[in-house]
Length: 346
Image 1 (cartoon, rainbow, N blue to C red):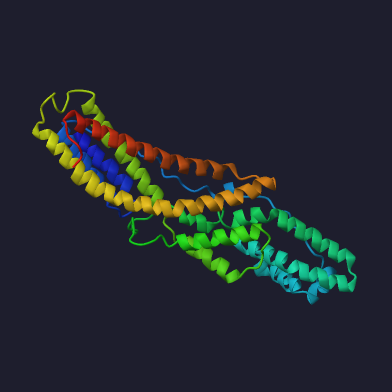
Image 2 (tube, rainbow, N blue to C red):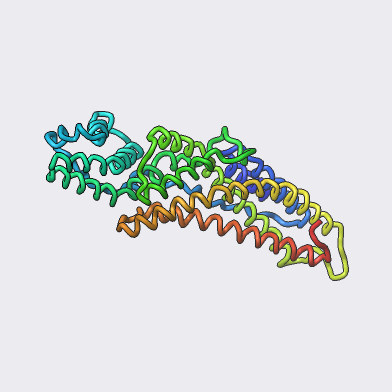
């Protein structure tokens, strides 16, 4: 059957980026539906993968308060002087967004003690310069956090399209869940003025976040969405034309349909989908909390969230909402056809 062949190709292409049971499961289910309903399926039209915004589209601007050489020499009495020296080194000047966040947090954490030292030396001018720099860094801290996390390479890799070597869904928890929760705790502390950090722990946590499977989740759910839409359209095409069952009759095709629904959808696709949904329920709340707590503070500080991120976030949410509706539509369509034959799922 030409339509079936096109359907299989479409589903195979959709699933080819990751080793997943979903593609073959949808192929088997829709093929059986075609046979029992005597209808041709429409090849699914999957959404494009929701690629994370490019780095250049998530850039935010920062001020660059500096300390002159003579002032810096006076700061050698403070631990803050060592931190500034590291920042002004070649490696410090070429650090990434995470490194710059770490520097600003260390600056803010060490500032108060240094100001007390300068009070003893009656160095009012340098003290005012440091206070001004600290105020700027505190004001820009939400943007620094955004640049080091949601706009950084680790979160981009977390949401990246999966490769063929990966198997999804996996057994056990997403390796990113625990470090994401840790990041959320730190983020709340930093935004509340608790700036003490362990730089190595921050970098290691970001490294663990990049190992997560959020991209696999997006890929699997767009596959499920395409499969649900195609399968529902197939059932609707039979509901809207020649009845599968006449009034008072229950032909063999009705039992075959219920068996297909039970064996290939409920016992197979739904079983895999439930594991994917558990992953989604574990991952999305912590992602939502990271975004919400940060974006609220950014807004109050008049720091504009890049539009590309906001659009990607909206598209991500829309995918999950469409999936919920598609599943509801499919269950309703299958139930209507069973009801036509005086049957219930079993």
